[in-house]
Length: 74
Image 1 (cartoon, rainbow, N blue to C red):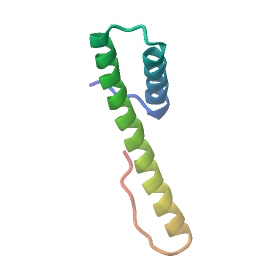
Image 2 (cartoon, helix red, strand yellow):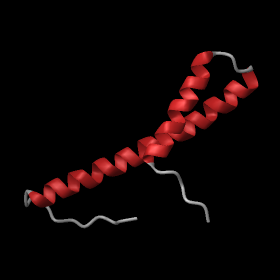
Image 3 (spheres, rainbow, N blue to C red):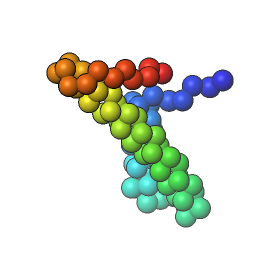
């Protein structure tokens, strides 16, 4: 079983993808494939950030006594 990359690894790969596309020297078919990979990386980073935001919100609410709700830990 392979582990999915963490946020930092995904972000670094996304930055490399953006750099590759920004150079403008890729053939169209390769540029489309790189763009598609970049979209997947973007979605992964966004999902990780959204999950982190939700966890922080729950922690703050629990600390302030507003709500006590456990969250699943991966």
